[in-house]
Length: 293
View 1 (tube, rainbow, N blue to C red):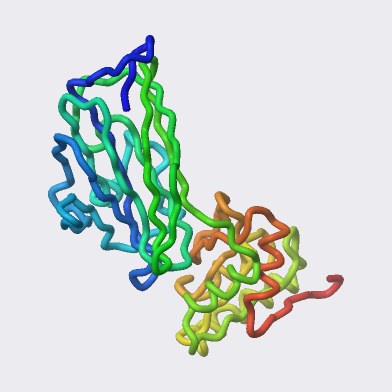
View 2: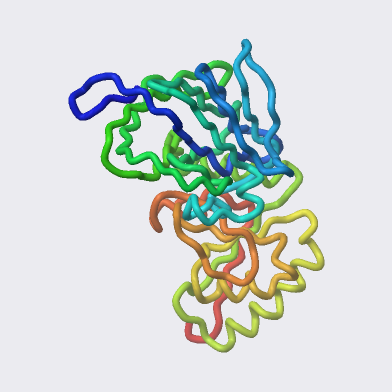
């Protein structure tokens, strides 16, 4: 609902809210959706949108159709990539005092982040609504493992802000390890690469450069090679293991390995949790060391 500075009901002639980068987890799991519950509302999408449109009990629904992860999340709502724009929708309300939205995700184990901003992330609208927004998550229920969150947005006049709402339940290290094993597939062997994570001897470096491409060539099609995402042996292995398509680099949430190859996988909130997950996820641990290590 919208109220003026004296706490009296206020009707806004034009109000826009953008939801962007709606995606889902692997194999169609944790599929994000938005249901527009009421109001005089129109919507704007990219011409080649990746969102599916539908109706739920007479209300408009926007449903993700492509997988994504924290790695491809936008950093600024006003500078979206073409793919991020395809996964976005702008809702425009006329003569609005209040509005209701339902956001949620289908069953799955991937934490999902719902990102929105109080402006148009797609169209070049010059008019802006000067507002401060308070987000209140009023309910979080699970039905058939589908999390649905009801949002009630309270607005007062002052400035424009961009909000990020994260709907997630923190996973324990053993749960993360189990999820990663499931994502790899039951027929895939997880091989963890262990070695010096700060510096490495010339012997170690030469050994890693020799075995990494050989392992990828011989068993890469049925294996995932997992590193701790740090410099030293992990980086050398990742950057010499074929094209990197069989490499996972475990990194704490919000961090990046910076490696030229391999997929960064969020594992834990910090280095200690990442290390614990690394110790749980593997079928085989290959330790690399050279003279003096």
